Length: 335
Image 1: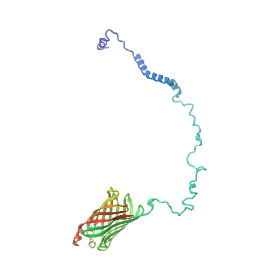
Image 2 (image 1 turned 135 degrees about the vertical axis):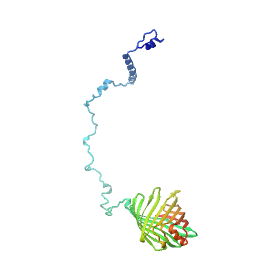
Image 3 (image 1 turned 90 degrees about the horizontal axis):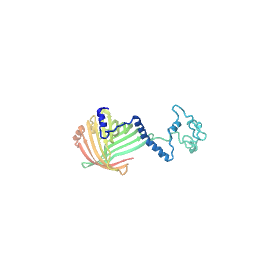
Image 4 (image 1 turned 135 degrees about the horizontal axis):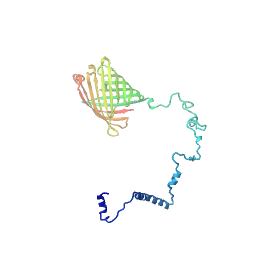
């Protein structure tokens, strides 16, 4: 021990004049063991007060098999279970199995008195043909003191993937059909909500009738816009394109607002039918309908129509306006 340490121990007022003895490591270990064994002895005494015999280390060692040895007495099997009699699934049915035709008296759909025909009686929904007719616009139009009529009809029949589609659109002036467009199309499902269409178109108007080969696509675009895009090829190198889009905005459960826009363009002028080359016409309108039922809904609305390019020049030469705003009223129905 250094001098400073000796002086701090022996020179203090408490230890001065006394001889200090330090405990040996053996005594320290015995003291720690006694402190640790105190709670265990108290717990054993507590269990003894309750009449519970705690197992000793010797008894626990005697009841536990030594490592690497096997208990000579395996557990006895459960009474009443004979695993030798258990059989795997499969094979022939047992003799007392229930007859699958017992509930029908032995009759089936392919034999017996309930046989109607050899055709399959149960069919899926996409295997059955169905028809549909829609009058999207059947209305009267009022503009510049003159009342005209207009219609936009569609009918289809077929299955989910292949259908026959008939489209008809036209205007009636003074009780006579002024111009019309009729299409007969084969519609084929291309993807979810989208169909391709191929067929023929027939036009009537102030001039000679025109026939076209039609091909296009129709469907439901993102955000629920109904889109129809169709191209046409006619005789004499004529080409045409029609695009239309509409959207249905429910204001209430029965009140529906329907905006709609349509444009037409031609690749070649047709003065006899008052059609010029390029962008020919654009119309945009909005209709508000009230659905008494989903199948029947009267409506009112307003529509703007304009002629452009060479078509507008032909209209000016004939003294007709190139822009027109109409108030419309009609009914929409389908079945």
